[in-house]
Length: 268
Ligand code: HEM
Ligand SMILES: *[C@@H]1O[C@H](CO)[C@@H](O)[C@H](O)[C@H]1NC(C)=O
Ligand SMILES: *[C@@H]1O[C@H](CO)[C@@H](O)[C@H](O)[C@H]1NC(C)=O
Ligand SMILES: *[C@@H]1O[C@H](CO)[C@@H](O)[C@H](O)[C@H]1NC(C)=O
Ligand SMILES: *[C@@H]1O[C@H](CO)[C@@H](O)[C@H](O)[C@H]1NC(C)=O
Ligand SMILES: *[C@@H]1O[C@H](CO)[C@@H](O)[C@H](O)[C@H]1NC(C)=O
Ligand SMILES: *[C@@H]1O[C@H](CO)[C@@H](O)[C@H](O)[C@H]1NC(C)=O
Image (cartoon, rainbow, N blue to C red; front, top):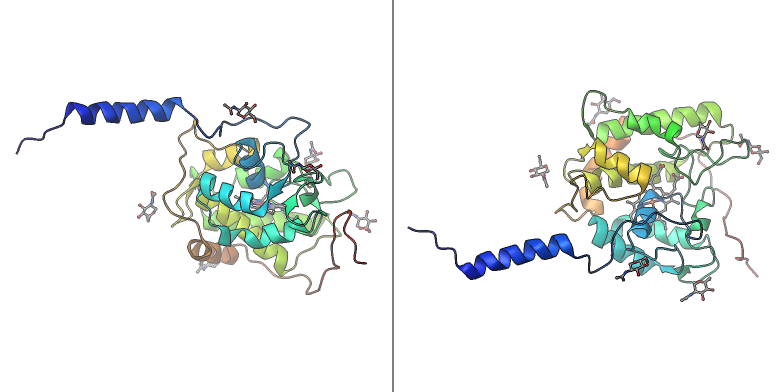
């Protein structure tokens, strides 16, 4: 049987291809932040802002905007990040948005921000305590993980978590290491693997992951596209199970941390 391709079909394929390459109707071009834009210790939220999936100035951002942006940009479902977002709102005084100082107050230590991060230093007054900005030295543990392969996977991610925590325990006398931090850290690892790699296996090209952390940019020019699999707590579960096991974690304290409230919030 002869395969018939109509001129109309060819025309429309060409048109679609051209339109996709040419237009950015939603204005999601990467633009690095200026000094006037608020950013957080979270490379995920910062990337959403740098691409205009949430307000580029980092101000007046609702939880709903974050949930929609994460879905649109990363194919990340709300169920994986809603708890962090709700906690995060306690960093500011506005009832429903990240407004006063925008995303900045998310750096509040031990609210969502935690020790033993993979791309930031621990909070502290000793000069290495910049818990907000990307630090290339600190990032070397992840950058050099899984030697001999061009990808990261859940086992390498767990080993990175283990090494980063050992560094904090050795060097930070105030390290906080409870179940809360462990769950957050494992979720964050699960997200970078699932977004930049295969959301079923958690195998992610190193190049894509490194660009995300270093530049807070989607590596579209380098060939990354949003994955076909919706990333949910159900898809993360098997990946995080391997991460947690490989991180060989033990809790250092079982305690209820003091209630944390951002500036401008008081109980009356
Ligand atoms: C949009 C999907 C998200 C992605 C892909 C994402 C990804 C990440 C990753 C990979 C880290 C680890 C950084 C590191 O250890 O150096 C991180 C940290 C963080 N995330 Fe997100 N995140 C997302 C959503 C959120 C939400 C909704 C909040 C709260 C509003 C949040 C707040 C934070 C904070 C405060 C940190 C700093 C923790 C620390 O390392 O001390 N993130 N995130
Ligand atoms: C795209 O976003 C940038 C940064 O917010 C803005 O300056 C520019 O006017 C926008 N362009 C369009 C076509 O909306
Ligand atoms: C954005 O947030 C700032 C600081 O809370 C506030 O002054 C401003 O009115 C808000 N803008 C909008 C459009 O809601
Ligand atoms: C640990 O916390 C104490 C009390 O808050 C502070 O004085 C000290 O500088 C902190 N040390 C480090 C390394 O963060
Ligand atoms: C990055 O982290 C290293 C190791 O903790 C520290 O010595 C260095 O000062 C940090 N760099 C910046 C720019 O903060
Ligand atoms: C992810 O890996 C699974 C298992 O190897 C495979 O079946 C699937 O096709 C992969 N997905 C993508 C988008 O490559
Ligand atoms: C758990 O981690 C240990 C090493 O820490 C490894 O030998 C074992 O295979 C892992 N088990 C699973 C189910 O990943």
